[in-house]
Length: 189
Ligand SMILES: Nc1nc2c(c(=O)[nH]1)N[C@H]1C(S)=C(S)[C@@H](COP(=O)(O)O)O[C@H]1N2
Ligand SMILES: [Mo]
Image 1 (cartoon, rainbow, N blue to C red):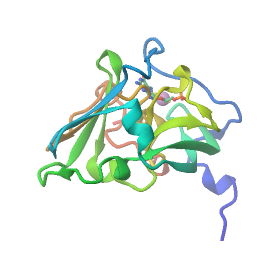
Image 2 (cartoon, rainbow, N blue to C red):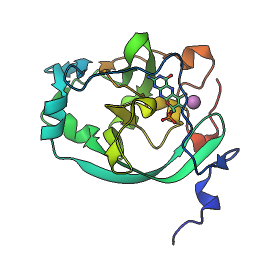
Image 3 (cartoon, protein in one colour):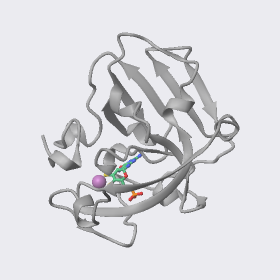
Image 4 (cartoon, rainbow, N blue to C red):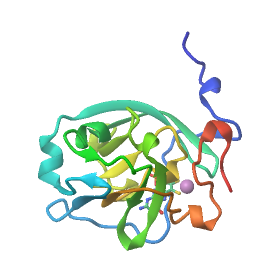
């Protein structure tokens, strides 16, 4: 049975119809021609994925709900990109890998348990609502992790590092929850 809109909104959240822009610091202006995504750490082989590499991979479209820790949720957002599982196909994530550090420019990071990164709905996204992702929303390429608060969905994605241990990221070291499940209202630690 389909959920009602109300059932799709986690506790303490309000629906919005606009798309707020939120981040620490300045909007990063990354050029597709020079952008690359470093896949490193406990993975064999490590790789650098260019814009052309990414476009050459099978793409996926996905509609999902997003939830920001500041209290807004947005239903039925439509994205296109490459599933992380697709991106990592053929690579060998080493047995000791349990967590990942997600990197963006300026030293910004966020952390995820490996299992959350490898979920089916996690996308390396480059289109939003049928248009190239704007710099304000993380273009050319951002991570999309629908199961967690939106701060885990790194804008201007430049790195995924596989680690044995949890390494708290930018917001997580500033008091945000290490995991950030909106259904459990894991806002702060
Ligand atoms: N690189 C980077 N990504 C980031 C952030 C940031 O500060 N830097 N902020 C996060 C936060 S707190 C939120 S709520 C979402 C907002 O995404 P939006 O601006 O597309 O709504 O981006 C996340 N991704
Ligand atoms: Mo946020």
